[in-house]
Image 1: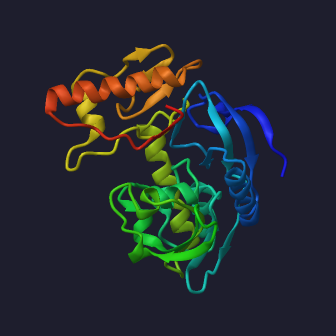
Image 2: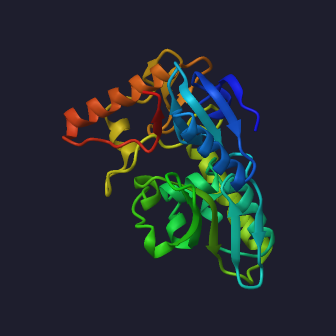
Length: 290
């Protein structure tokens, strides 16, 4: 495969920040991922695997070694009779939510506004508006990064928790995910529900500016956004990075923010919340290169 050199990763994240990848490859199938991993191992080269970059903060200095991007692994197989849906790791959640709605399948309406991919969402057990991946996932096809072997792992084996799974804790990558949805529903009713969910997110969250979505996990039963807002941190800026005035659990890029600015705001929020409540907020966002 062609390896591109010194490619800016700012176009590979929804925050629109991040330095260059020493080498970058965009895999389009399972065999290419395996080949790239084998190449990195043979060359004793560090590597990172990224998807749509919707939950990712990449250092301004960039990433050494090989960056493998899976966002071109797209597609899905939908069975509107039994409700099974197999989606490739790079398929975007909103795209999949719209496809299954057209097939009259109920169960992914909550995901319509999440700007991530199936692979990343499965690994972190993404959720919104009362739903989450764990409730609908039947199984996932994964690849062990050490052996480069692919195998299927089932829901009960994935140790799903709040924004967590076994995939995050072990050296494996999601290749595709199989969902069990409810067939036989009215397409228009599901699409209406999709539109209502999307409208709610657009009204309550700052989707007009680059962000990663929610920065911190909620320390249940408390809400991270409310804790941050109560400390008067809405609108706090470092450079062009700002704690959103619309939703305090969002950090937005007002144009020319740097990863360092965003990282500094994240640490500031953690410090302020810990001092006020003796509580450490844990980021949902994954940092690379820090």
